[in-house]
Image (tube, rainbow, N blue to C red; front, side):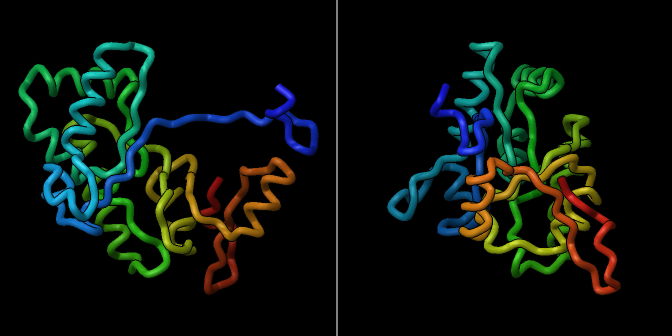
Length: 202
């Protein structure tokens, strides 16, 4: 237990979240990622990830799984037979199969126009609401190249997220947070009119 204590003497709680991050187009096309084609570029077979997750969840009621990119989920869900769709709906209802972010993809922040961020998030959330009656409540930005005020102000609280988890913070900020065992924070984006209270993110 001493290994779990920070320099401040407080206990560090670690949460493991089985999840995905499957880019709908980065090094390969959407179909190549989904079907596991052209693995000379990168090994990835998204349909197998979802198939194996469904099997694992059905075998063990203690397991959970979090999915992120709705584009791939929608492709996979369309191939399921009625009993499998029913199983997925039951797993979603019991919160064993959940969605974080829930956009069509996990958008970048630093160089993406806010309209694109809004549109792809709306598309993903609309699909999940229509098919499964669920809308994600947690933002999951683990692969952005920089952060934007748009993410904190519009794309978190503005789309109903209670929290946002993200990766790639500045190395000095990360070192300070590790040293102080303070990984949570309140992100108050600056606005052109000087107001920072609108859209604050926990």
